[in-house]
Length: 346
Ligand SMILES: Cc1cc2nc3c(=O)[nH]c(=O)nc-3n(C[C@H](O)[C@H](O)[C@H](O)COP(=O)(O)OP(=O)(O)OC[C@H]3O[C@@H](n4cnc5c(N)ncnc54)[C@H](O)[C@@H]3O)c2cc1C
Image 1: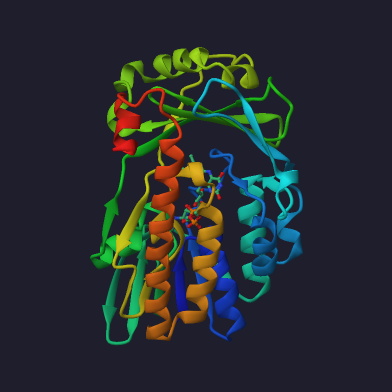
Image 2: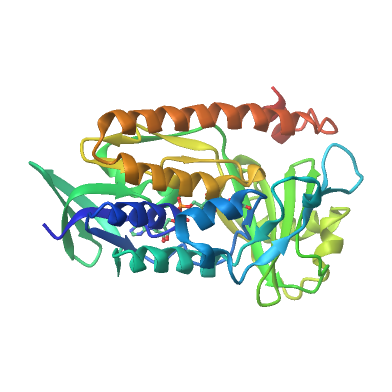
């Protein structure tokens, strides 16, 4: 046996789980293919998120990111309103440098004794009490437990036979561009007939500009980039915040659906983070849920009852998320007959 536990995916969920498991005296191998690393999504941590990250990864994990003092949004009317975090008892949020944040989470897991190795998980087999995981380059690792922390692809879980169930087909069309616009360190959101836009400044004078819509509402591939740029020009607020985009940057399409893996755990395996359940980015709850799930699975790993309780709680969180999602989408009544909004307002 190479390790008690192999965790595939060294994002925040995998690193949180590894940190807890090594604290319990288990040997942990974190395998990561390096594909996700990068700040293309421009994630923010809402107020309250900073304390959670500190409690799992230590104080250093929130160093080197930008404070977020609020969110500006045009939602339900053409006016741009501000939600100022000064009004919440939980304090400011953070605009994360995601590549840095992931490295900080992994460094913490490493400092607790986890071994992090590069590799792309391709397949696994189980015999008796042992998993053998095979990497794309043919390398193999053996373990008693196998954990899927691969994000929305659930690469391990689906190979074991679990099924990913989607509640919607939301996608993000994302361009990372030079930041020539508004220097306010915060996110701006704007609802439009075909979905909604957001933009967030990134470190290194860059900025994420993204349009969220349903996969079937995207323009055909050849027209996609031009349609994205002209839709951005039609926004009332986001285009001002973004400023001029030089060149014809081609936005990349990423999945952003709300979905869940059935089941999330079984005999000596489980899924955590986005691999178990993923959320509409409007909620900004992905990272907090991923880290909470990872840490809790680390405590529950060899306790079937605790693992079942975790799975129940994730489903509970999904119902709460669905109620909140329908509340927020219901606030926007201007385009109730357009497909994107109609689907969400029933
Ligand atoms: C457009 C958009 C905006 C978002 N905005 C926010 C926000 O503002 N706030 C927020 O909290 N959340 C946000 N999220 C959600 C957040 O990005 C995710 O919830 C979070 O990244 C989940 O962490 P994770 O560790 O579960 O998975 P990931 O971060 O996806 O990590 C998975 C890791 O597994 C690796 N991997 C995948 N497959 C394999 C394989 N076969 N072999 C080896 N390694 C593999 C990947 O390279 C990666 O390192 C947003 C998401 C999107 C799509």
